[in-house]
Length: 445
Image (spheres, rainbow, N blue to C red):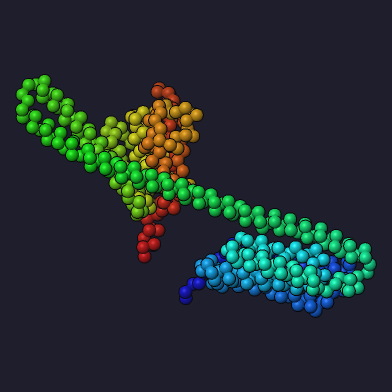
């Protein structure tokens, strides 16, 4: 049998239901107080009719979730439907006010509640129309109403008590309404604003990142031609030079040219990684093997150690859902670690209940505490060499909705060599980036 998922209630409908509950509560308390305490004899059948319609609207509000016209899909239909619904609620309030004293009734301010909700969800044109209608209802119940003194009020003192106590009740309940409903709305708007700011920041970072990748590829193409020309000339000079001293110069030149070519190839690969943003699954052993191989190419005198947490063993069972830019981010951090700690570079992988945590540790002595919070925030050069590479790594990690942080640490090696101080780069990524291979096979089926 097909399974129909229940449609979630939109924020607009939640606020509407809350407002109807509030109105039903305050009217039931007020009418009971009128009748039982002040002995005001209003028309029970007519007041019951208006109040019953309000309760019916409240009960029917549960089914509003399934009405497409109240969902924010079509702008005009959405505004028109909500405009009519809020006018109906104003009409019910006006009917109750008509039967209980008109504008003299302290509950007259309840006409503003649908207007406040309309301010949040309606377009300016519809809101202006709603404001005009609310003013019309106010003027109507000011001149057409059942006078309170015709309801057999016991005394003038009871009349003033009705007005004074009712004003206090309305004020207290409006404060409660603002505290319970408007404050959460403000928090929701602030949360949405923070999300938009984050998305804007990520978009700008991604644009900057892609521009750097494009510039790197352009530089690679421009440098390839002169380097190839120099390599060809070197081969020709080997046949022309016969002295031992000249041959040594040419050999040194060839070695330096090879270094330039390797650096250029590394730059080309990293620029290619940066421009590949489509995610695809890759087995964790393959990812780690490629990471070690490419690290060995750029740091031939260093050895990368990999350590996996117990939750990732055996690693053959795990798959990463990522794109090549993650490898670029890790290579940048590993390259910086190797500059000041050739003998020790360790990368650890572990999974917690909420995140995939990757840590890169070195024995390079660390950095000043005042600089830790600034690392990777902007391109800079300092004593630890953490410049553009780390800045790009942070942008890539944030694109994965992750977080990069740095801290100094002390590694207790052994009694002979003593403690080693170094820098720890910790990457926290969403846990959804890594999963069991069985889950991938089930998803493909």
